[in-house]
Image: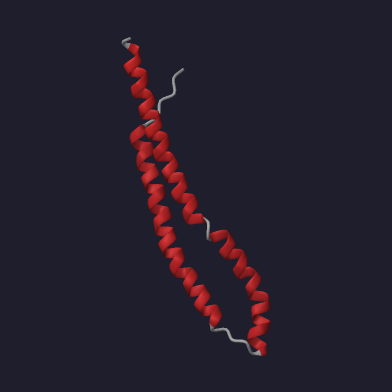
Length: 100
């Protein structure tokens, strides 16, 4: 049994994952700034303070879960591209050694 990597496909998917991460980073950054600016406008009067007491824990949870996502997509994409390059080099090295 042999296992062969489709290097072209892995590189293409890796590039797509990086692009998704790049888009997510850009768009999440915009949305995150909107969240922060909207929070700043809530106010510090009794109603605003009461609202923030319930709102803030949810905001922190969303931000802490969403902030790392762009980098994870980018890392997966870079990892795919590195694995394809490593596989291709190993394949070339093996082929070069066959004639010796």
